Length: 378
Image 1 (cartoon, rainbow, N blue to C red):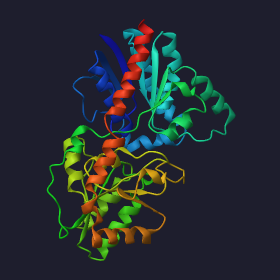
Image 2: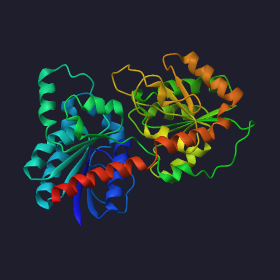
Image 3: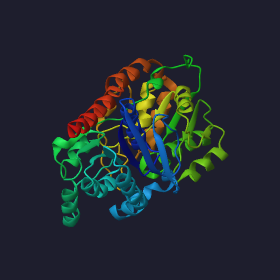
Image 4: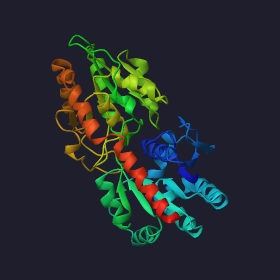
């Protein structure tokens, strides 16, 4: 049986969930996989072995890693040291990394051990104007054997410092269970339910929805209600609104995927977010459940005001909203309450999810990793 090590600086994040799925497919193909990560696990794949390092919650403090490469490195330093020691002692066939900083720093040392490196990341780099940093990235980019990114945009981004032949795209995908709905058919008499799932932080675009929700509550509009689920650095904002208003609920962070599916099924519309070229995992899971989505016009990238690729959200499955205009948001929500277009959008949503966000993508990536290792063994 081949051994592999997967290293992650966080467990409660979409990037790790995506990587964990790939590791799960490899585990079914005769790989013994150990996961080494910071903080508490949110769920466990029974086919994988988990080792954790006690650490602050990433979904509360992890936004610090977005502020600078140095902070990202310092956050991951205990993981880098422990990961290298584990690789040196146990000699897995390959090491997979969740995160660019961790992967690029460890890859040269892992290469010295004669092992393969697979870097997986969901990060926007953009134009690197600092010459020293640009040269460092190009130097470190020579060491990974494979780089897995989650969109064409991320692929083009990585190609500025990594050989494009090493880069493969693996978009988020929804677990099979999300495609099967147990919810009853809603009617035009039901109250419109808008759900947000994701980190409760400014860059995720949930604050404008909070403001809109408060507007409807102040106006005593009882035909719409709002539910928010997730952790983050700004949960006090939504906790305060939920305490004040009956039609706003804060459900905390939902660890159990079955419970999360139930929440999607109660929704009429799911407010989510996107990067410039890919949808966040909650948006994809909502589509799989047959729920139309609302995506902010501006990408969920801290410090950026780049716009989202409009082709990510065809009009038959949702809306892209200008979060700089509160009037635009209010008008959209009023339209949802009055016309209830979501009642006829279920099939279009699930069809798009099946076509673009199915398990086939993950199986293809797992096959490429296995081919890389098998070639090395020959």
